[in-house]
Image (cartoon, rainbow, N blue to C red; front, side, top):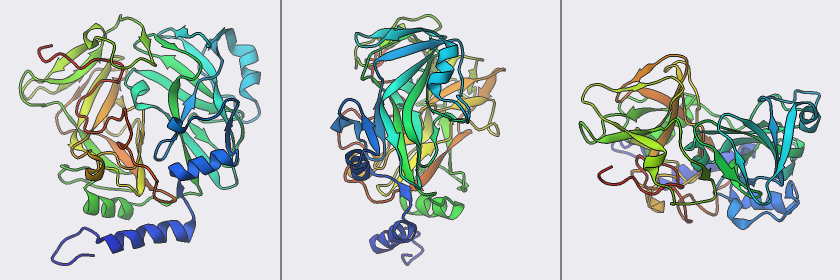
Amino acid sequence: MADDGDTRMSEAERETLFAEASEATGTGVLPSQALRAAINAHEIAAARPIEAVQVQPASLDLRLGAKAYRVASSFLPGAKRTVAERLAHLSLYEMPLAQGAVLERGAVYIVPLEEHLKLKWRTSATANPKSSIGRLDVFARVITDRGTRFDRIEEGYAGPLYVELAPRSFSIQVRRGSKLTQLRLRRGSPPVSAKFHKQLQADFGLIGSAEGVDPSKDGMPFTVDVKGAGDGTIIGYRARRHAGLIDVDQVGVYDPRDFWEPVHARAGQGVLLEPEHFYILASRESVVVPPHVAAEMVAYDTTVGEFRVHYAGFFDPGFGCDETGGAGTRAVLEVRSHEVPFLIEDGQIVGRLTYERLAAPPDTLYGQGVGSYQKQGLQLAKHFKPWPARG
Protein backbone atom coordinates (compact mmCIF):
# COMPACT_ATOMS: atom_id res chain seq x y z
CA MET A 1 0.00 0.00 0.00
CA ALA A 2 1.02 3.64 -0.38
CA ASP A 3 2.89 5.34 2.47
CA ASP A 4 1.91 8.32 4.65
CA GLY A 5 -1.37 6.78 5.71
CA ASP A 6 -2.77 6.83 2.16
CA THR A 7 -5.02 3.76 1.77
CA ARG A 8 -5.20 4.04 -2.02
CA MET A 9 -3.36 1.44 -4.07
CA SER A 10 -0.62 2.47 -6.45
CA GLU A 11 -1.09 1.64 -10.13
CA ALA A 12 1.33 -1.27 -9.81
CA GLU A 13 -0.48 -2.63 -6.75
CA ARG A 14 -3.83 -2.31 -8.50
CA GLU A 15 -2.59 -4.18 -11.57
CA THR A 16 -1.10 -6.88 -9.34
CA LEU A 17 -4.35 -7.33 -7.42
CA PHE A 18 -6.35 -7.59 -10.63
CA ALA A 19 -3.83 -9.94 -12.28
CA GLU A 20 -3.78 -12.26 -9.27
CA ALA A 21 -7.56 -12.40 -9.22
CA SER A 22 -8.01 -13.07 -12.92
CA GLU A 23 -4.96 -15.09 -13.95
CA ALA A 24 -4.91 -17.37 -10.92
CA THR A 25 -8.54 -18.36 -11.15
CA GLY A 26 -9.52 -17.59 -14.76
CA THR A 27 -12.84 -16.37 -13.44
CA GLY A 28 -14.82 -13.19 -13.72
CA VAL A 29 -17.53 -11.31 -15.57
CA LEU A 30 -16.85 -11.37 -19.31
CA PRO A 31 -15.92 -7.95 -20.76
CA SER A 32 -16.95 -6.56 -24.14
CA GLN A 33 -14.21 -8.21 -26.21
CA ALA A 34 -14.94 -11.60 -24.60
CA LEU A 35 -18.63 -11.17 -25.43
CA ARG A 36 -17.71 -10.57 -29.06
CA ALA A 37 -15.56 -13.71 -28.98
CA ALA A 38 -18.50 -15.66 -27.55
CA ILE A 39 -20.66 -14.39 -30.41
CA ASN A 40 -18.04 -15.40 -32.99
CA ALA A 41 -17.83 -18.84 -31.37
CA HIS A 42 -21.65 -19.16 -31.48
CA GLU A 43 -21.84 -19.40 -27.72
CA ILE A 44 -24.27 -16.51 -28.15
CA ALA A 45 -26.21 -16.75 -31.40
CA ALA A 46 -29.34 -15.42 -33.07
CA ALA A 47 -31.43 -15.94 -36.19
CA ARG A 48 -30.62 -12.36 -37.19
CA PRO A 49 -27.05 -11.06 -36.90
CA ILE A 50 -26.21 -9.60 -33.49
CA GLU A 51 -25.59 -5.86 -33.82
CA ALA A 52 -22.37 -4.23 -32.64
CA VAL A 53 -24.36 -1.73 -30.54
CA GLN A 54 -25.75 -4.58 -28.44
CA VAL A 55 -22.35 -5.21 -26.87
CA GLN A 56 -21.84 -3.11 -23.74
CA PRO A 57 -18.68 -2.96 -21.55
CA ALA A 58 -19.76 -5.98 -19.48
CA SER A 59 -23.18 -6.97 -20.81
CA LEU A 60 -25.15 -7.73 -23.96
CA ASP A 61 -28.47 -6.13 -24.89
CA LEU A 62 -31.11 -8.73 -25.80
CA ARG A 63 -33.76 -8.20 -28.50
CA LEU A 64 -37.41 -9.15 -28.57
CA GLY A 65 -38.35 -11.79 -31.11
CA ALA A 66 -41.15 -11.97 -33.65
CA LYS A 67 -44.15 -12.62 -31.37
CA ALA A 68 -45.48 -12.32 -27.85
CA TYR A 69 -47.75 -14.59 -25.84
CA ARG A 70 -50.33 -13.17 -23.45
CA VAL A 71 -50.41 -15.50 -20.45
CA ALA A 72 -52.74 -15.78 -17.50
CA SER A 73 -49.97 -15.50 -14.91
CA SER A 74 -46.27 -15.36 -14.29
CA PHE A 75 -44.57 -18.76 -14.15
CA LEU A 76 -41.31 -20.65 -14.13
CA PRO A 77 -41.10 -23.79 -16.29
CA GLY A 78 -39.52 -25.95 -13.59
CA ALA A 79 -36.65 -28.40 -13.81
CA LYS A 80 -38.37 -30.86 -16.16
CA ARG A 81 -40.27 -28.68 -18.63
CA THR A 82 -39.54 -26.24 -21.44
CA VAL A 83 -41.09 -22.81 -21.75
CA ALA A 84 -42.87 -23.91 -24.94
CA GLU A 85 -44.49 -26.79 -23.06
CA ARG A 86 -45.77 -24.40 -20.40
CA LEU A 87 -47.02 -21.92 -23.00
CA ALA A 88 -49.10 -24.65 -24.62
CA HIS A 89 -51.25 -24.64 -21.48
CA LEU A 90 -50.91 -21.08 -20.16
CA SER A 91 -51.00 -18.93 -23.29
CA LEU A 92 -54.28 -17.06 -23.85
CA TYR A 93 -53.31 -15.81 -27.32
CA GLU A 94 -50.28 -14.78 -29.33
CA MET A 95 -49.58 -11.51 -31.13
CA PRO A 96 -47.05 -10.62 -33.86
CA LEU A 97 -44.47 -7.94 -33.06
CA ALA A 98 -43.20 -7.17 -36.57
CA GLN A 99 -45.31 -4.01 -36.83
CA GLY A 100 -45.37 -3.32 -33.12
CA ALA A 101 -47.86 -4.22 -30.41
CA VAL A 102 -49.18 -2.78 -27.16
CA LEU A 103 -48.46 -4.58 -23.90
CA GLU A 104 -51.16 -3.56 -21.47
CA ARG A 105 -50.52 -2.37 -17.94
CA GLY A 106 -51.38 -5.13 -15.45
CA ALA A 107 -51.03 -7.97 -17.97
CA VAL A 108 -48.26 -10.58 -18.29
CA TYR A 109 -46.56 -11.54 -21.56
CA ILE A 110 -43.88 -14.03 -22.61
CA VAL A 111 -41.69 -13.07 -25.56
CA PRO A 112 -39.11 -15.37 -27.18
CA LEU A 113 -35.85 -13.44 -27.57
CA GLU A 114 -33.81 -13.27 -30.76
CA GLU A 115 -30.72 -14.53 -28.96
CA HIS A 116 -30.11 -18.07 -27.76
CA LEU A 117 -27.20 -19.60 -25.88
CA LYS A 118 -24.82 -22.52 -26.04
CA LEU A 119 -22.70 -21.81 -22.97
CA LYS A 120 -19.43 -23.56 -22.33
CA TRP A 121 -18.59 -25.45 -19.17
CA ARG A 122 -18.02 -23.10 -16.22
CA THR A 123 -19.86 -20.26 -18.00
CA SER A 124 -23.17 -19.04 -16.56
CA ALA A 125 -25.23 -15.89 -17.04
CA THR A 126 -27.49 -13.43 -15.28
CA ALA A 127 -30.00 -10.98 -16.73
CA ASN A 128 -31.61 -7.71 -15.73
CA PRO A 129 -33.87 -5.08 -17.28
CA LYS A 130 -32.12 -2.20 -19.00
CA SER A 131 -32.08 0.98 -16.92
CA SER A 132 -34.61 2.76 -19.12
CA ILE A 133 -37.07 -0.15 -18.78
CA GLY A 134 -36.72 -0.41 -15.01
CA ARG A 135 -37.50 3.30 -14.78
CA LEU A 136 -40.80 2.63 -16.58
CA ASP A 137 -41.80 0.15 -13.86
CA VAL A 138 -41.80 -2.85 -16.19
CA PHE A 139 -41.00 -6.27 -14.79
CA ALA A 140 -38.68 -7.74 -17.42
CA ARG A 141 -37.33 -11.12 -16.31
CA VAL A 142 -35.50 -13.66 -18.44
CA ILE A 143 -36.45 -17.34 -18.22
CA THR A 144 -35.01 -20.47 -19.81
CA ASP A 145 -36.10 -24.00 -20.53
CA ARG A 146 -36.07 -26.07 -17.33
CA GLY A 147 -35.35 -22.93 -15.38
CA THR A 148 -36.18 -22.66 -11.70
CA ARG A 149 -35.19 -19.00 -11.17
CA PHE A 150 -35.76 -15.75 -12.99
CA ASP A 151 -32.73 -13.98 -14.51
CA ARG A 152 -30.36 -16.83 -13.62
CA ILE A 153 -28.96 -19.08 -16.35
CA GLU A 154 -27.08 -22.19 -15.26
CA GLU A 155 -23.59 -22.96 -16.51
CA GLY A 156 -23.49 -24.90 -19.74
CA TYR A 157 -27.08 -23.97 -20.67
CA ALA A 158 -27.91 -24.57 -24.32
CA GLY A 159 -31.26 -23.37 -25.61
CA PRO A 160 -33.59 -20.45 -26.24
CA LEU A 161 -34.17 -17.40 -24.06
CA TYR A 162 -37.51 -15.85 -23.20
CA VAL A 163 -38.48 -12.71 -21.32
CA GLU A 164 -41.51 -12.23 -19.11
CA LEU A 165 -42.83 -8.68 -19.44
CA ALA A 166 -45.31 -7.21 -16.98
CA PRO A 167 -45.90 -3.44 -17.27
CA ARG A 168 -46.92 -2.13 -13.84
CA SER A 169 -47.50 1.62 -14.21
CA PHE A 170 -47.77 2.34 -17.95
CA SER A 171 -48.82 0.40 -21.03
CA ILE A 172 -45.92 0.13 -23.47
CA GLN A 173 -45.51 -0.34 -27.20
CA VAL A 174 -42.79 -2.76 -28.34
CA ARG A 175 -41.72 -4.40 -31.59
CA ARG A 176 -39.38 -7.06 -32.84
CA GLY A 177 -35.85 -5.93 -32.05
CA SER A 178 -36.75 -3.75 -29.07
CA LYS A 179 -34.06 -4.02 -26.39
CA LEU A 180 -35.52 -4.34 -22.89
CA THR A 181 -33.11 -6.65 -21.08
CA GLN A 182 -29.37 -7.27 -20.70
CA LEU A 183 -27.30 -10.41 -20.27
CA ARG A 184 -24.08 -10.69 -18.27
CA LEU A 185 -21.84 -13.76 -18.73
CA ARG A 186 -19.63 -15.07 -15.97
CA ARG A 187 -16.79 -17.58 -16.12
CA GLY A 188 -16.50 -19.68 -12.97
CA SER A 189 -17.54 -18.31 -9.58
CA PRO A 190 -15.59 -15.13 -8.90
CA PRO A 191 -14.94 -14.74 -5.16
CA VAL A 192 -16.70 -11.83 -3.47
CA SER A 193 -15.64 -10.83 0.04
CA ALA A 194 -15.85 -8.02 2.56
CA LYS A 195 -12.10 -7.49 2.13
CA PHE A 196 -12.54 -7.05 -1.62
CA HIS A 197 -15.24 -4.40 -1.16
CA LYS A 198 -13.31 -2.62 1.58
CA GLN A 199 -10.22 -2.39 -0.60
CA LEU A 200 -12.19 -1.07 -3.55
CA GLN A 201 -13.89 1.52 -1.35
CA ALA A 202 -10.56 2.67 0.08
CA ASP A 203 -8.93 2.93 -3.33
CA PHE A 204 -11.73 4.23 -5.53
CA GLY A 205 -14.44 5.62 -3.23
CA LEU A 206 -17.14 3.38 -4.69
CA ILE A 207 -19.84 5.09 -2.65
CA GLY A 208 -18.33 8.53 -2.72
CA SER A 209 -19.71 10.54 0.20
CA ALA A 210 -21.01 7.75 2.42
CA GLU A 211 -20.03 8.17 6.05
CA GLY A 212 -19.35 5.14 8.17
CA VAL A 213 -20.06 2.69 5.35
CA ASP A 214 -19.75 -0.94 6.35
CA PRO A 215 -18.66 -2.97 3.31
CA SER A 216 -19.43 -6.68 3.46
CA LYS A 217 -19.43 -9.67 1.15
CA ASP A 218 -22.97 -8.60 0.26
CA GLY A 219 -21.71 -5.31 -1.11
CA MET A 220 -21.54 -1.59 -0.47
CA PRO A 221 -24.50 0.07 1.27
CA PHE A 222 -25.93 3.25 -0.19
CA THR A 223 -28.51 5.74 1.08
CA VAL A 224 -31.38 7.77 -0.37
CA ASP A 225 -31.62 11.51 -0.89
CA VAL A 226 -34.99 12.96 0.12
CA LYS A 227 -33.56 16.29 1.24
CA GLY A 228 -32.51 17.63 -2.14
CA ALA A 229 -31.47 21.25 -2.41
CA GLY A 230 -33.86 22.29 0.33
CA ASP A 231 -37.51 22.53 1.32
CA GLY A 232 -39.82 22.45 -1.69
CA THR A 233 -37.27 21.20 -4.22
CA ILE A 234 -38.04 18.14 -6.34
CA ILE A 235 -36.46 15.03 -4.87
CA GLY A 236 -38.42 12.37 -6.74
CA TYR A 237 -41.28 11.46 -9.04
CA ARG A 238 -44.35 9.28 -8.53
CA ALA A 239 -45.99 7.49 -11.44
CA ARG A 240 -49.52 8.60 -12.27
CA ARG A 241 -52.16 5.91 -11.95
CA HIS A 242 -53.73 6.57 -15.35
CA ALA A 243 -51.41 7.76 -18.09
CA GLY A 244 -50.82 7.28 -21.80
CA LEU A 245 -48.88 4.79 -23.88
CA ILE A 246 -45.07 4.78 -24.05
CA ASP A 247 -43.18 3.50 -27.09
CA VAL A 248 -40.01 1.98 -25.66
CA ASP A 249 -38.00 2.84 -28.78
CA GLN A 250 -38.74 6.57 -28.64
CA VAL A 251 -36.26 8.93 -26.96
CA GLY A 252 -36.98 12.36 -25.52
CA VAL A 253 -40.52 12.69 -26.90
CA TYR A 254 -42.89 12.49 -23.93
CA ASP A 255 -43.87 15.31 -21.58
CA PRO A 256 -43.01 13.89 -18.14
CA ARG A 257 -45.89 15.74 -16.50
CA ASP A 258 -48.35 13.48 -18.36
CA PHE A 259 -46.88 10.43 -16.63
CA TRP A 260 -45.36 11.61 -13.35
CA GLU A 261 -46.12 13.73 -10.31
CA PRO A 262 -43.19 15.53 -8.65
CA VAL A 263 -42.32 14.66 -5.06
CA HIS A 264 -41.07 17.67 -3.10
CA ALA A 265 -38.74 17.82 -0.13
CA ARG A 266 -40.24 18.78 3.19
CA ALA A 267 -37.77 19.74 5.88
CA GLY A 268 -37.38 16.87 8.33
CA GLN A 269 -40.37 14.97 6.92
CA GLY A 270 -38.90 12.30 4.66
CA VAL A 271 -41.13 10.71 2.01
CA LEU A 272 -44.11 8.48 2.75
CA LEU A 273 -44.18 5.64 0.21
CA GLU A 274 -47.76 4.66 -0.47
CA PRO A 275 -48.45 0.95 -1.07
CA GLU A 276 -48.16 -0.18 -4.70
CA HIS A 277 -47.19 3.25 -5.97
CA PHE A 278 -44.02 3.55 -8.03
CA TYR A 279 -41.37 6.19 -7.28
CA ILE A 280 -38.17 7.43 -8.89
CA LEU A 281 -35.66 8.66 -6.29
CA ALA A 282 -31.87 9.07 -6.23
CA SER A 283 -29.01 7.96 -4.04
CA ARG A 284 -27.45 10.56 -1.77
CA GLU A 285 -23.98 9.37 -2.73
CA SER A 286 -22.20 9.37 -6.05
CA VAL A 287 -21.41 5.89 -7.34
CA VAL A 288 -18.23 4.66 -9.02
CA VAL A 289 -17.64 1.41 -10.91
CA PRO A 290 -13.89 1.17 -11.63
CA PRO A 291 -12.78 -0.14 -15.04
CA HIS A 292 -11.73 -3.59 -13.79
CA VAL A 293 -15.00 -4.51 -12.05
CA ALA A 294 -18.74 -4.63 -12.71
CA ALA A 295 -21.54 -4.03 -10.21
CA GLU A 296 -25.12 -5.11 -9.58
CA MET A 297 -27.62 -3.48 -7.27
CA VAL A 298 -29.51 -5.70 -4.85
CA ALA A 299 -33.15 -5.37 -5.84
CA TYR A 300 -34.83 -6.11 -2.54
CA ASP A 301 -33.57 -6.37 1.01
CA THR A 302 -36.16 -7.00 3.72
CA THR A 303 -33.73 -5.90 6.41
CA VAL A 304 -33.96 -2.24 5.35
CA GLY A 305 -37.73 -1.95 4.92
CA GLU A 306 -40.80 -3.34 3.21
CA PHE A 307 -40.01 -1.99 -0.23
CA ARG A 308 -38.15 -2.93 -3.39
CA VAL A 309 -35.33 -0.78 -4.76
CA HIS A 310 -34.03 -0.85 -8.32
CA TYR A 311 -35.55 -3.19 -10.86
CA ALA A 312 -32.59 -2.70 -13.23
CA GLY A 313 -29.45 -3.80 -11.51
CA PHE A 314 -26.41 -3.80 -13.85
CA PHE A 315 -23.74 -1.10 -13.54
CA ASP A 316 -21.02 -1.45 -16.18
CA PRO A 317 -17.32 -0.66 -15.70
CA GLY A 318 -16.65 3.05 -16.10
CA PHE A 319 -19.95 4.19 -14.56
CA GLY A 320 -19.29 7.35 -12.54
CA CYS A 321 -15.55 7.36 -13.26
CA ASP A 322 -13.49 10.52 -13.78
CA GLU A 323 -11.85 9.14 -16.91
CA THR A 324 -15.19 8.68 -18.65
CA GLY A 325 -16.58 12.05 -17.57
CA GLY A 326 -18.87 10.58 -14.95
CA ALA A 327 -17.64 12.12 -11.70
CA GLY A 328 -20.56 12.81 -9.41
CA THR A 329 -22.97 10.37 -11.05
CA ARG A 330 -25.63 9.12 -8.66
CA ALA A 331 -27.70 5.95 -8.78
CA VAL A 332 -31.35 6.32 -9.73
CA LEU A 333 -33.62 4.24 -7.53
CA GLU A 334 -36.83 2.61 -8.73
CA VAL A 335 -38.84 2.14 -5.57
CA ARG A 336 -42.12 0.40 -4.81
CA SER A 337 -43.54 -0.09 -1.32
CA HIS A 338 -45.44 -3.29 -0.54
CA GLU A 339 -48.34 -4.05 1.77
CA VAL A 340 -48.07 -1.05 4.08
CA PRO A 341 -47.12 2.65 3.86
CA PHE A 342 -43.44 3.14 4.61
CA LEU A 343 -41.67 6.34 5.67
CA ILE A 344 -38.29 6.68 4.01
CA GLU A 345 -35.95 9.30 5.46
CA ASP A 346 -32.94 11.18 4.16
CA GLY A 347 -29.72 9.21 4.54
CA GLN A 348 -31.50 5.93 5.18
CA ILE A 349 -29.74 2.83 3.83
CA VAL A 350 -31.94 1.42 1.08
CA GLY A 351 -29.80 -1.18 -0.65
CA ARG A 352 -26.36 -2.43 -1.60
CA LEU A 353 -24.13 -2.59 -4.65
CA THR A 354 -22.24 -5.85 -5.15
CA TYR A 355 -19.01 -5.63 -7.14
CA GLU A 356 -17.36 -8.43 -9.13
CA ARG A 357 -14.04 -8.69 -10.90
CA LEU A 358 -13.93 -8.83 -14.67
CA ALA A 359 -12.12 -11.68 -16.40
CA ALA A 360 -10.08 -8.99 -18.23
CA PRO A 361 -10.20 -5.20 -18.62
CA PRO A 362 -12.88 -4.24 -21.19
CA ASP A 363 -11.92 -2.55 -24.45
CA THR A 364 -14.69 -0.01 -23.93
CA LEU A 365 -16.06 1.71 -20.83
CA TYR A 366 -19.48 2.97 -19.85
CA GLY A 367 -20.01 6.56 -20.94
CA GLN A 368 -17.67 6.40 -23.93
CA GLY A 369 -20.59 5.85 -26.31
CA VAL A 370 -23.86 7.72 -26.79
CA GLY A 371 -27.04 7.45 -24.78
CA SER A 372 -25.62 6.72 -21.34
CA TYR A 373 -26.83 7.99 -17.97
CA GLN A 374 -23.35 9.27 -17.07
CA LYS A 375 -23.40 12.45 -14.91
CA GLN A 376 -27.02 11.80 -13.91
CA GLY A 377 -28.62 12.98 -10.73
CA LEU A 378 -32.35 12.47 -10.28
CA GLN A 379 -33.38 11.50 -13.79
CA LEU A 380 -36.35 9.88 -15.51
CA ALA A 381 -35.97 7.36 -18.33
CA LYS A 382 -34.63 8.44 -21.71
CA HIS A 383 -38.11 8.42 -23.23
CA PHE A 384 -39.06 11.69 -21.51
CA LYS A 385 -38.16 15.29 -22.11
CA PRO A 386 -36.38 17.07 -19.25
CA TRP A 387 -38.66 18.10 -16.39
CA PRO A 388 -39.62 21.78 -16.88
CA ALA A 389 -37.57 24.14 -14.71
CA ARG A 390 -40.72 25.48 -13.11
CA GLY A 391 -42.68 22.24 -13.23
